[in-house]
Image (tube, rainbow, N blue to C red; front, side, top):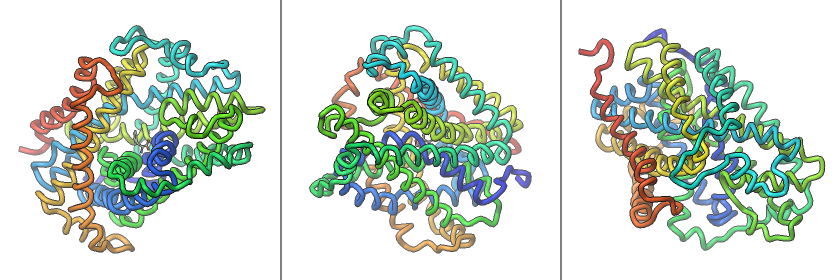
Length: 490
Ligand code: PHE
């Protein structure tokens, strides 16, 4: 594997890892999760999760990629033949996510444009659901929505070009542009937001600690879930990215830098979002608690309202949606790279062929999410693939490595041989006990909820077909493709 692609510099790798980690999860997920789980007090479980699961897992994935220098399934196979399927399972999960993520980026890019005219008028919710998405009843698809389709095609073309140009001239270069731009856009938003009237009330609501929440198990689970999603762990991404590191590269330090940069951006997003929410509450005479939202509701309903209430607000709206686009694009590229690398190695095709196949296939599937029923489908697939994909695959991966393959000593020796910071016993302890216990507990809780009630009240049959089946299908695919032999393997 001597001619394996490589990052051009340490910064290039770091920017790509940060680009993957800093995504929609930072901007629209973290602020609401922190607020709902104890506000200022949430930082304790959050930091704990970062140090006992996030960074340890990141170090583990970086080390696996760096040591075994291959795509996730092949690297896992090199650790133990019985683990290859986990890598494919993660790749299948990443593939699924890569079919709906560009749809959200497409919405955001249209909204960046809408910001100037405030096309959503005085009812952003109805505009989003009825005028923009032309939404149909849950469980039906209707037809493709052109105003989503066109921006999505452009996004796919950009993703295609970036991946086609390769690791160094494509992914690295793109992140060198995306990340600084994102930082500038987002800093401008935060500065504007904190100087709005009412901003302080919003920040107060965000940081006010509810200490009793620390005793609540579900708050801890939320902290771990946020860290996992936000650091792109369990997606096969970080293994793939670190497989392109030159032999002499620091691992542990890079993991700390990635982890802390990602969390800093989350904190910054929390400040920006809550300052803006405080402004909105002040303008409408509501409590901050009444206007808090996360996810799609925050970005496409609440933010447009905030924009409408601001003086000279076109630019503010544009910057907010441009940030979503930039953060989303670099995550999108990272997630697609997992299957590009996997297909390239398993089928022994050139990188370019693999990009054609991967992006071609993913973009066709993504059309389903550009339909009138796309939002409900996206919500369902996202929920199930996160809970029974990423979290479960992450759990099985860490248990496989720590307990079955008993690989932690080897990995620690490898990481220590190239890194400035040496790993202490906290690393092995975290991966052996803390991460599996928390993830296992989380899994049981989720199963309990989803076995007894229909997620979001959607029709059961729809949830079965597009929730459970997609999540289980990804796992079956993993097992299935493992049966095919690698090139030059007898
Ligand atoms: N870390 C990303 C985020 O915070 C998660 C992600 C990565 C999602 C890659 C999709 C693709 O949004």
